[in-house]
Image 1: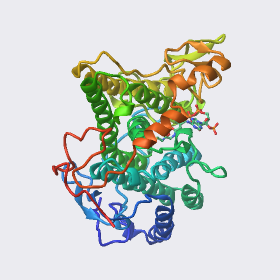
Image 2: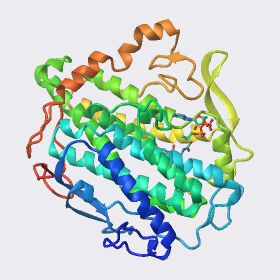
Image 3: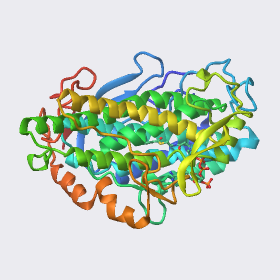
Image 4: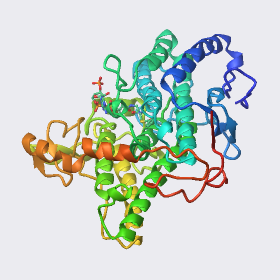
Length: 471
Ligand code: BYC
């Protein structure tokens, strides 16, 4: 393990210097990455931004904060420290030493998992590229850019694995990661949620709450991988991911807080005319982002996931804390299913139900967000509450992809759905309204009227710090 050297072209702690071929390959990918960043990354020109840059992987002092021109941000390759005695914790290879190279028989599956993970990272940067121009404060703009540069670094993390361990095919896949684009008709991103738009800041906060949280859970399962370089990469990515979670959680907090305040002060639910976002609109955005994020966990039953687990490639959330045999060959699980057209549950083998297992961990985490937003409402003395919609609501992947259901889980005909979906999902009118609030507030210490200021600034700095210098 080496300490990253920032004098190098690609800062890294993987001794890139010792492998000239790999170093050259990555150095030739670097300009392509930068030209992707220029053409698909943030559109608002800035002079510099107060950014966190990873400088080490230890528990303390792993990041440095300072104003940097965004193009000069040092996207590096960082793997968590290696534990020499680490053993595979699950599946058919349980107890064997973890792999330092790709096992030939699992090459295709591992590559696929890494490509899917890698594909989401630049996708989110593309989705968020126009948001800075309508940022509600310099603090928020800085957080957006922090998330963006770190998603760029997470792309580097996956590209490093592809280049270092998957030969020519890996290098080709690394190129493809820059060619597919979010929402493109010809070459879209792989997973559904990453082709949706993020046209406003309410969407951004919901995305960083719900979709980034899928990232947290998927990275958590890949951190368990028997392929040690993947595990160590994901471990370090999760460290950065905590900030993205904070942006989403406190972002929605602050929207709800502001709305609640206007509702109480003016004694009305109809806060749109007063420049705040009505709770009903917040609920619709929540419904949308939660349901498309549920799709990211794949089908309720999946032979892919059973194979990944048995092969030791992708574990469960907090695998080592689970009290079972970690092979699951004889276990079963109840999963959501459509039973003779009705929404119900069916018992399946625990292995094929692993996507459901992970989705349930995720749902429990999402419930904690809703609880905190409801606490804000209750502390404001309001009886209104937000809620997660039913798992069958607005699903495009898995058991409920072929049916329609209301947020409380009643089955609906296609005609009922078409007539009522505007009550539950953002309509064009809602989107236009939210968009109308997105007037940029780019002056130091100021904030848009639809959002409460944050309780804390970044790295101990106050809210009115000069987080971003515009050109
Ligand atoms: N959209 O067997 P099934 C993040 C495909 S987010 C389109 O049930 P499986 C981040 C599926 O690929 C985390 N297609 O699926 C967040 C399969 O295709 P094939 C990203 C979908 O394989 C914010 C077929 O449908 N990381 O990091 O068990 C900002 C049958 O499905 C979708 C990962 O996802 C969909 N939503 O599970 C930045 C981890 N869902 O085989 C970053 C790696 C499924 O028939 N990926 N399909 O061609 C995986 O572990 C799995 O591939 C999935 C799917 C969990 C995604």
